[in-house]
Length: 380
Ligand code: AMP
Image 1 (cartoon, rainbow, N blue to C red):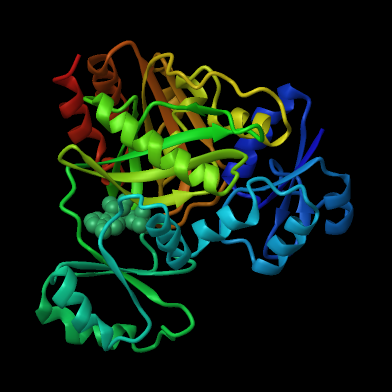
Image 2 (cartoon, rainbow, N blue to C red):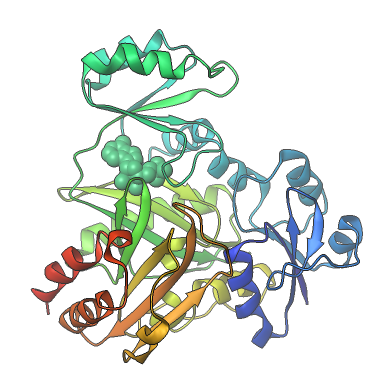
């Protein structure tokens, strides 16, 4: 079996690493140069994109912002999983909101802004605390602006003046006073069967994921039902094949969808050590027609992103049940360089491991680690 992944970053790398034991050969497309590359070494391979498409049994994406002409070409091969509608809904927040509204899946109150003058209307209907998101090409907090009060509106309008909102609208969202952020990852195969990972709790800083804990502590049956129902509605609508992630805000006992990611997701990286079958393996299984693997958690897990730094000690590997996954990138501010997975029998054990781990890390880059360890230490 051969798989071609659009995008050649860490997610393609981890899909490739999971595919090898299944006898699946993975190649990647660098979507900027349009070269076919090795997903681990990034070496350019002596194959044209057309040939790579023809030779592949399945095509997939590691991120949703693939140029549309490439996606169209991939889709016309009839081998793109998930399909183009799911990928485009993940790439365009206007489409994403339309799908959520059409399926009556609860999400944050919002307005689509095609002209800055509509921001007054947004404040009138949604309140003065708003988060504005570019509908396309925004990720990890990029392409987002926060309005904390009406007084900031004039300066925000100036900042937005350079954007052509008629071409790329903004979504103005009510700032949700959420209790926490959760995500659900699952896989759907072409027969419409599902496996679900346990909900993960996600801690963000400046719009970027820093820490995930799975299974999320203190999850009620009602939260699982709400999350899985929303997931199923969306995945069935797209006739989705592969792993998908849905990010939620928990407000009291209610879940609101924040975002859909039509791909493997950072908040599922814990599954590499913490689940029976990792998200990467399940994605490969789903898109090549292999049976889906059990997605149960074997342990309590914490996943800690290494962001914008490389001056940590690899002696952290001396910690029991600590695993390092590096992406082979040069360091840049806010760049995801790798992640660390910890597993334990209890949250208290995870908390201890996190506290030990902190000794090996430059703490300025890990602002969520010790607070989360404190919280987990009080759980069983
Ligand atoms: P996003 O790119 O939409 O996932 O946003 C990045 C992060 O910004 C989220 O994980 C939240 O921490 C925060 N955020 C996004 N939308 C909202 C919202 N409507 N209310 C409060 N916080 C938000």
